[in-house]
Image 1 (cartoon, rainbow, N blue to C red):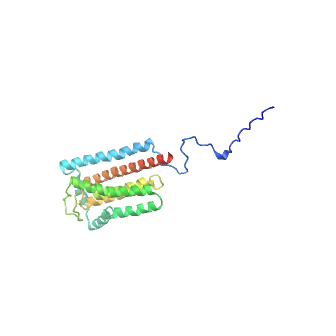
Image 2: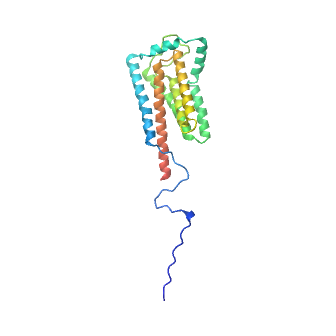
Image 3: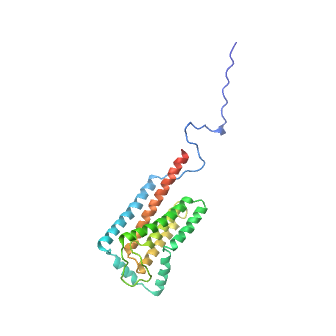
Length: 247
């Protein structure tokens, strides 16, 4: 008696796909954090090191000599353009970079980003502005540089001078917004608006006689370093969460 052939199992339909191998991570419909190329890493290095080295050099000159060679010359040149109209404008402009206005701007922008589900960007903006304010307070306590006295100040300030809190606040806010807008069509408008904003705020502090130019430069440098650190920390956290989801 012959043995009937054993029927072969039916092939799975094409729509079923290939089963995953044991131990292989399951596919997810949610995209993970964008990979960081060597180009991004190469760009982050100079953004951290160059302003850090510039700040160290400025701080060394301030501690050693009290003033930098260009401080007095630049301030006296700017002072030549003092008029009642310019003073009124600069007094209004300087408030846009103050420790009252910038946090308000940051809270509004961060709230909108959070409401739209962009929580990482909201965290970046909040950490950039809040951390900058705390860092500025600490640095001023360390250096205790007196404010310039070339002429009577056009606004009242009673804290130390180095580095400029207005320069740090405005640069931290602008740099965070530029990072947020970098992968959108608003990249270059954000860059232009941000640079104009920090430049005008910085100029107003020199014009009003309450900051040396080196205070402004130092504030910009520290702010860029701080925002770079915040971005690196948040990107590292995103990559770790992505690996955990994929495991």
